[in-house]
Amino acid sequence: MDRNDDVILLSHGDGGLLTHRLLEKHFLPSFDNTILSGLTDAATFPVEQGRMALTTDSFVVDPIFFPGGDIGKLAVCGTVNDLAVSGAKPMFLTASFIIEEGLPMADLERIIGSMARACGSAGVSIVAGDTKVVGKGQADKIFINTTGIGYILPGADLGYHSIRPGDLVIVNGPLGNHGLTILIEREAFKFGVKVESDCAPLNPVTERLLARFKGIRFMRDLTRGGLATNAKETALASGVDILLDETSIPVDESVRGVTELLGLDPLYLANEGKFLIVADASEAPAIVHCLKEDMGSGDAALIGSIRPGKGDVCLTTVIGGTRRLNMLTGAPLPRIC
Image 1 (cartoon, rainbow, N blue to C red):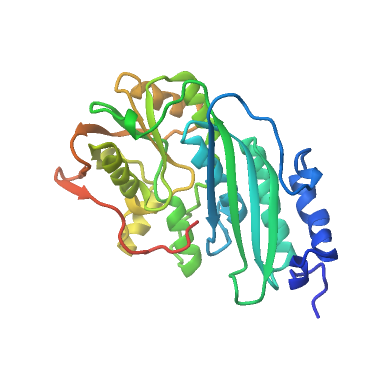
Image 2: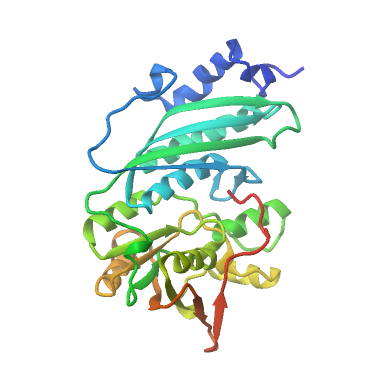
């Protein structure tokens, strides 16, 4: 018989003594803050004047641990980043856990610790949450749902409506690392190269950019579907065409080599620390310089431009041809986030 403190039991989710001990021993020490410690039915907190931003997401990644992160870090960064690219300063998160009976307590502790460190990096607090335990086979180890709230930064008015022909397109670094990392770990491929997820909070970067540059029109977190799908969605929603230059798009050599072997396109692979910026042409070079020199994004690059149109995305290829990019179809990499 497993000891109560070694693995998750169904009784950890029944609201009784073991639930109380799970909160006191595992969750509260890592997530402790004055709002959460009240353990009330709803968190209450003051808000800034102006507009607020709210987002929610669920994380079911497989495997739950991978080079560069785990499901806990991913849950925090994914939600923080959705707020950040919307022009918001993330403030508070909620976190709900659905845990499969039998999950080693050591794995839960590792995930909680990772979430706490990610919250520290992003400057956010988890102020409310919930835990449910389901029987073996009714979930796969652990699923996490997070909701994030923040306030829109002064002067930020990002959106599809702001994008104009003549604007330039920027990415803050190499693409495809997260999606490829998950695939390699899940399938236990041995390629002899190091590929690591780029999972990281973006708000320390986006907040500084928005404070410094007034010509940023739009930002987009390049998660599921990668650059290609997100660019296509952006073009359709804003009623413009986007022309991308393949030679300018940063991709790590390890990612390029493995994707060529597997027949994958890094432009369609998920990222968890990369974002697209559409900016006024007069400021775009300075934004790239700032990302490179001041924010540690050495591979940030201008990768394209906005043209009048009706929602097409075209890629000028290395050999000088033109390729049309559409949204990802099918699910070549399930459960990447």
